[in-house]
Length: 415
Ligand code: CTP
Figure: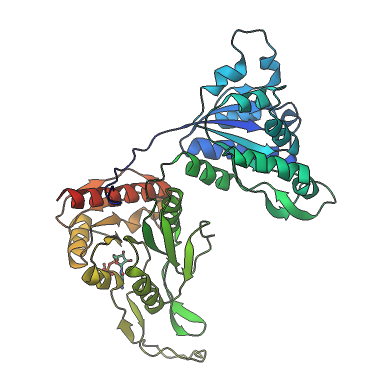
């Protein structure tokens, strides 16, 4: 049997996505979803149904997708081969956005009287449905039956979710389309190799809080975005993920086992408990190096005199894992202001890490680092060799960190 560590990293492939926009009121969200898909690196083609064009113009869709928009009007033009067959060769995945009960029914019944339905019958790639409709229409046995049929053919669904609906007087209910970001995540999951299946990742994220009294604490501006991005990509690639997270305002990726912590000592307890059973640890948490020696159980009242705080060093959690490490791959993140590579390599050696990702706080104002969506990092190995990575999204950094972990397993296997 092939060792589960003997897995080659997949190169990052840009993929072609064909988006079918349907005539639900949620079609208004289609331009944002198209823009997000394009920003995530996908090349798009768009089909809009006749009803969709009553909610959003073809020009808006074309501008967002940076592609032509195909409609029933082109389809009826006399041409050899047929537009649906020509389009069916393009996609690696099809997304049916703002999917209506009508489009689902046509697909489930194999009807082909319009360009969208005919294309759905012609493609041979994964199909993702993103429904958006009135809850009563969604829950109707006809729609649910069509969903079951489509799923039995391997079609995928994301949403709908419960929430406020676009139809006047309808209030809330199960039928609202998921947000554009969730569409991107679901598409990524569809076209990404599940090369981490069977592996368990422990990811830490966010800041710790070291309370001085019940209402004051020492912390840092970590947003948790880097760790959440690693967790999300690992899940999309089929891994099991335990996400130990400090207080952040992010929603954990679906499927992660989430352990909420506040202090460094709580983080240490959670990480130590999970360590034995995991294959790799990615430690993005910004751990406070000190905690109050004598935290007060009552709120401290201010005085006019200077206040001296006595702080006790927190344990180095990652170093502790480095001492216990057997089969696990250990990855740290380091923020340095100068002599970055040397200091990071030294940290990687001291903590017995496989590699460490170096980033610089000085870049925060440029949309990189703490709180931002992008990061610019350097991968540093304990032997001092390093790779400078250009600026990229944290999701892409996460993906490359996971590729780096797979490389390490490969190296270990070879040795
Ligand atoms: N780390 C940890 N426990 C600590 C401090 C840091 O596990 N008490 C982890 C971080 O999560 C990170 C790595 O160690 O992955 C490097 O963190 P960093 O703060 O840069 O390193 P320190 O060892 O704290 O060094 P210094 O603050 O002196 O630069």
